[in-house]
Length: 221
Image (cartoon, rainbow, N blue to C red; front, side):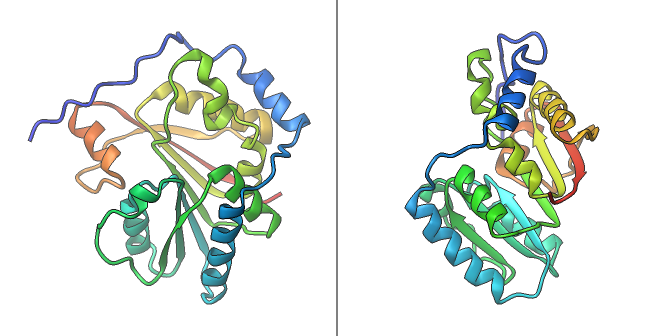
C-alpha cells in the first residue's frame, strides 16, 4: 500500500511573532464563552461513568475515531480512559468493542476542558494526538497554544503528551507551556514501530515524515 501524505506547508519561517502576546492575553482574559448544552450533557454522562470506577484518569483529547482511546485503554488497563471528539461521524465508526475501561464522548473540547477543571478533574495523563495544525500564520488563534483555553488546558495538570508531524507546532506549544507554567517541555523525534496510536500517526510515518512528541509533567492548579 502506498502512503503519500503531504507534509505540512506553512508561510511561517519560525515560531509565530504574535504567540507571546496571544498567550499573555489568554492569561489576562479568561474565557467566558457560554458552555454548549450538548457538552454539558456529555460531561454529565462522563462524570457518571467515571464515578463508577476507582481508577486514575487518562484524557485522550481530540481522539478522532477512537483508535487511540482503545490503544491507551489496553496499554493502561488500571486506568479509566476517556476519549473526546466533537465529530459524531468519527466517533460512530466501527472499530470494535470499546474496552471496559474506556469511554468515547462527543463534546467540544474547549467546553469539556473547562467543565473538567471546574469539576476538579486531575488526569494522570493527557494526550493531544495530532491536532489540526492550522498552518497558515493567520490561523494562530485556532492552534491550541494560541487559543484562549490554553491556561485551562494546562491547569488540568498531569503528564501532557502532544504529538504532531509539524515540528513548528510542537516548538510553539513548548514556548507557550514555558510562558504559562515556567516549565521546559521535553521535545523529541519519535519513530513508532507499527505500534501507532492513531491512523494519522501511521499515515504520516509510512509517508516518511518525521514525528514529534512533547512531554511535560504539569501540576494541577
